[in-house]
Image (tube, rainbow, N blue to C red):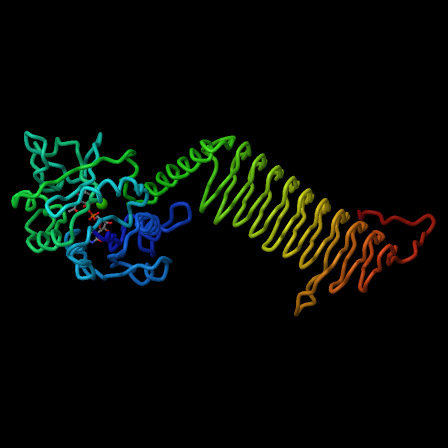
Length: 453
Ligand code: UD1
Ligand code: CA
């Protein structure tokens, strides 16, 4: 039966104290609701329906995957919310109900429920809690069969002692949901149409309820406050750290790494504390990353050493390079193997070929740098004339003296040498020495200024 996923995301999230709807707040830099949408997609859902209400336009504008939307203009309860999605479903569909503010449920956990659904069975995710306060309680008969769910506010003394709580996550046939939701009312303590009321109705007409529990309690944790969101962020990050360590990566402290995207790291690489990885980052084997590095959308090949406080964005780094400390690779930096980029060096949209070095205090932008080039400290490619960007080409074996300005467009030919402190405004041919330098003047017995009294 085709799988369709309904995600409830209409709530405001008053306790977030935010102008943004709750489900758009982020875990690992991804809106919470998108974690759920991604899980639905990994389950092969044929359709995902977001039930939106508060901040509906913002949700529509933010979610990137192709999903359907239904608007629940008044939040009359979870049962009412699911009902809004039913017109978009076919009776034969298997429907998974999930929540935009419960971001970390694993697809495997959802899958267990989906697999249980038949025309006469509903599958429910429950959780045993030390403190079930606030949760709907799972009422079972002597034989252990689910009979009903009672909400906290409607529960008797006896029922409040039940420690098995309702996560709200369930899977059922669309036809069953349609029929059962058509019969619920709002005669309860909160005056809401409870989704949970379908269970008692289902049982009374001979249907069965199967239950599963998640592997981890946090899979069912919802976010109502920024504190709870921060707690889930740490749980998520720790699980990312676990995955990396299992794959053979050393983390100096698994509590001090942040992965906000897809990070792949090869065996025997070492990551020091406080590194942040964003977007798609692929790191090879035996790579060493120092503390406080920020790396986004980049590939780093085997054996490279990245020292402390380096920032890398949209760049690729070859094997056995050395980068940093305090280096910045901006979009379009492409380093071949054994390149060295040192402290306070910025590289943008430039190719640095094998074995070339830019070790100190330099800016290289819109440039092609050949092999075994040495760029001296304080060298600047003047790539911008105030209106347009221009290219600098530095061929193999060139030596550029310290504090050189290369005014683009300009080419320095193979094995040429530039004297320190030069401003190069036209082509330097292969094997030439070029320098621009005012003659050295001296004044004898120069009277040094004296400090005023
Ligand atoms: C619900 C369950 C409860 C369960 C708990 C788990 C019901 C009646 N109760 O209670 O058994 O233990 O979740 O957290 O289902 N929402 C809408 N539209 C609405 C109402 C809610 O989109 O009209 C969304 C909310 O934004 C929220 C989610 O559904 O994301 C749950 O709603 P909430 O009112 O928080 O339910 P609880 O009272 O926590
Ligand atoms: Ca809730």
